[in-house]
Length: 300
Image (cartoon, rainbow, N blue to C red; front, side, top):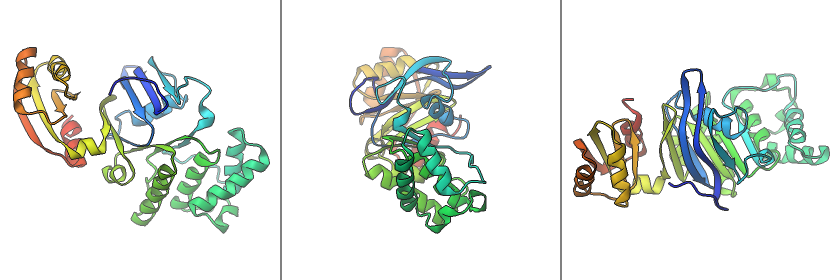
């Protein structure tokens, strides 16, 4: 999808990269992401958390630029973040911590306390909210992390592996909460390696691997149309470019190209002739999300 700005855009990036020495954690990501419920998928080390932390201003990009809510600064009061790793102060109560986070986000003390109780009601922490966090179970701690991300009523919420460590019942409860947030009109970005979580909550999907964004589309488009997975010999760039000029989407992952828009093998070979590419194989079928994910990142 092309890079563009507008009222319906949650965030956008242009050639965004982040390197740690010789390791390129995020590599040349250019994307314009619609508001809504977005799943950010990828194996461990794909660059998901690094992308989120860059968008939150927690780390500076090595190259490129980005905007959140149409702004490149001054937007943090409109975003919330539920981090992957536990970072909760065990000596505070849930009420004390969440209300403190509300004040840090700019809420007056009385408003922050009122919002704290509203959000703790929403996540299902009843009398436990007055206990110290160090006594909480994993599921309760995850609820506190969710509450602090929501207390200031942000427009965009980033969830980084929110179901980590939860049993099946706790995982379902957390996903229901996140889906309720999305259904209320907020934009949510759910970063996970669990495909069923994305299918349960999200409308759009982004897939990253080795720091690259290799797919961004709606789940309806991805799962509701027939796609081609094409492997070509050599650089797939000219081949994918020829397909795009013909009006088809073409996302590159290594030597494989995911071709959307119900293209047929005829169009594939036309693009191959135009770009002087050699087609090695074509796989043609409607994908489940798991099949698509494995096709794109399974052997990389």
